[in-house]
Length: 133
Image (spheres, helix red, strand yellow):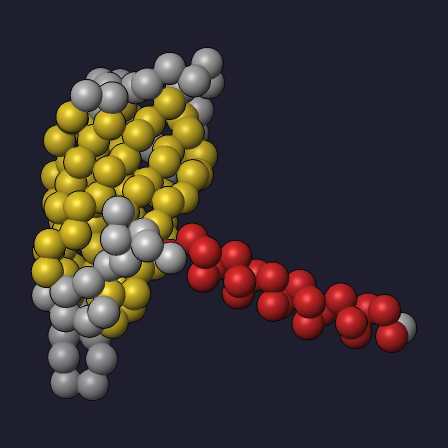
């Protein structure tokens, strides 16, 4: 029983440490959406103002996918007397990736969803949160 109690705090500490590394100097995450691998990269920690978001899509063989339509949605829920804020940025192809600019109007926690349409079908969104300073 004592071993289980020891492992739980260690696991929690490692989870927080790993999350901190992901945001140190920027953010990068890789997720699956249908049959594609989606890599989302922000070169700096999110902040109020313009934030570039780069998205690379790869098929099952690892080849770059450049024939998709994509939008990056970002939102903050309503709080107190403030209504919810919902925005989106179209991602435009640049070489083997797509680039969008999120113009974040205020500091706080923002929900982000990358929505991809390919071959006439909407793929499951890639979701994450970004804490803007």
